[in-house]
Length: 292
Image 1 (cartoon, rainbow, N blue to C red):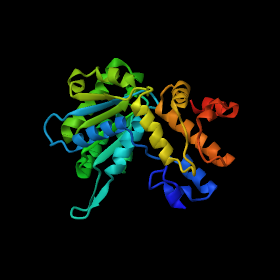
Image 2: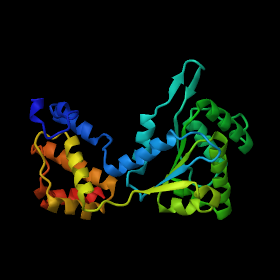
Image 3: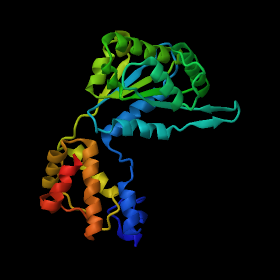
Image 4: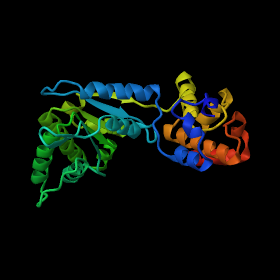
């Protein structure tokens, strides 16, 4: 029976043979979908992590509006470079340290979150100096090849002076550990980095703009269809592609949500495929509204 599901990726075909309940569970779970923009960002991250250590390391800024898949990309990269135990030295190594920015430019709170991300306890007296010393010591042991800070646009919640002081701390960490920094955020992240001219000059930027009706978008929808364990081949034409873009605004998260909802409806109804006509159905229209 698995051979009948040639419209799906090979790894998905066995899932299509499972029960409806199991397939619904799999469809609703988070999953990685590869596409050209993500591949480009991952390739840039790969270049950075393998960059030879020097006094001034290059950095990367990943910019895009909310829902464009920025966090998914860096989380994918972190999964591809997991922590491991160095049996020779008896230490835990972390090639990628991923930490989410605190709600404002607060160095002490950031160090606490950084320590939590690397699994290290806070000092008994968590002064800023003590937190910095512990973080540096543990990071030197973990030997990260990269520090990724997500939601960097939260920096703008502070004053210009607070932002400058926080960015100076990030520059210090990069210089001290001799590792690249990767900052992830909305367009406001780019503006926040400009507070530190020395730091911003070291950043190369990659933007994740909303999708347009082009070959890349058609390829994305095609890949999505092949990951959804529906037992019949879906039929989504040019008119449906335009409807998806108009409804979701070209936002990656909304597109994924929409396709997930349509796949769920296809299994529940027994249709087992997504059709272009679904976008004109009144019931499906309500699903479109919920996807954005």
